[in-house]
Amino acid sequence: MKSSIPLLLCFSFLSLLSLYLISSQNPRNHNPNLRLTSMQPRLKVLVADLPRSFNYGLLDVYWSLSSADSRISSSDPDPLLRRHLSTRRPLLYPENPLIKQYSAEYWLLGDLETPAEVRSAASVAERVFDLEKADVVFVPFFATLSAEMELGWGRKGGFGKKEGNRDYERQKEVVERVRASDAWKRSGGRDHVFVLTDPVAMWHVRAAIAPAILLVVDFGGWYKIDSKTSGGNSSHMVQHTQVSLLKDVIVPYTHMLPRLHLSDDKHRHTLLYFKGAKHRHRGGQVREKLWDLLVNESDVIMEEGFPNVTGREQSIQGMRNSEFCLHPAGDTPTSCRLFDAISSLCIPVIVSDSIELPFEGMVDYSKFSLFVSVNNALVPKWLVNYLKNISKAEKEMLRQNLAQVQPIFEYDNGSPGGIGAVPSEGAVNYIWRKIHQKVPMIREAIIREKRKPQGVSIPLRCHCT
Image (cartoon, rainbow, N blue to C red; front, side):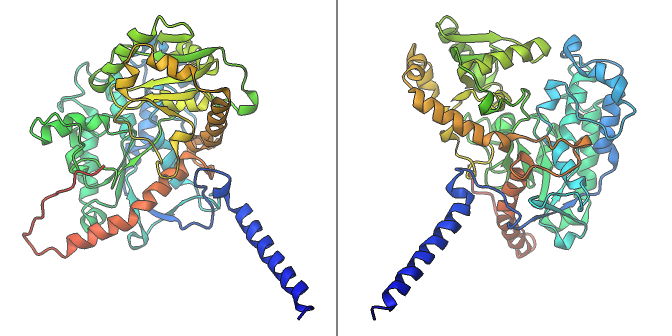
């Protein structure tokens, strides 16, 4: 009996050691965000059959334009690039900040165009060519680029009209082609993926693609549509007939400012920083009120400016020299500014009550951001006093957590034309993973639809968020 005790103790020690080693290798114990590994199931993606003119062909057209974007004219950086890029393949996505901030469509298609032998072992998406094997169908239309070209180079005031609107013609043709396909008929479009990062992308045909999985930066661009579908109801509830967190995916803007690594971070001299337009519409009216409250506060910088070359440099310096960066609602509940703050290790202060954020459930924003209600923020002196009372240790912890999540919001894979292995912890993989989470629900909805008797219509009852 005595001889068995050392053996038992040894066995217990080895068991505990094994559990420790397994635990220490589990990244969830070290990182508050879920990590992506090659062991996870792949999202099988079929690319819908659309002509090149709806994606990379639009880049050909863009880089052949002879004039600058009419909205920013002399501030448009792309006319200087055109003389070097017009004959180069593969083509880059525009550097024009009004367009680049919505570049998710470019990086997602680039990932799917990457040859299998080049793809990273940690890639979440796997391109398939058999509809029966596909989880989802990706629609390769650069809807944002199409819309922005019409806004910047089309007839003034013509975007909302259909006549003479080249973007509308493209939208219409994409919808006709996709809805006529066997894939759409099989699922009613529920398993189709459209990238609509620009709030006005596919503006004229949204009702036709409402059943699909929509990749959007927030739901703000849908409020006007929702108001109409609800008979003028002033409720801020997003109608389930258009967008819903159940079926759609919130994706990040592309950040405009370069990434600051934690090792390069220096002392920050300013308490709070904001740069952007003072006057906004809808929910963004809070921005003007905040501006008037904060503009004369010491240790707070409020700058009105546009994302041109000068504004970009001012933003880099302002964000890198400030402890906190203000993120109030604009025309929509979020903006590229949030992701610029993350890239700059400037702790975001989010004043936007109806904001939706990318990858929630995989990313805990409360670990690196501060959320302030509009009511509190509009109390004189409240916001400044609140920020001043945050301890140095808490600020350091928030900034360390910011550094951990920076890669998650990075689209760029460093490959020409965006075609190449994606970073395992980057935005593209996180988007695919978020879509993958919705596959079981999509399949259930498709099966339920099939068993309905002919002529039976079940009204939508869920206004879910």
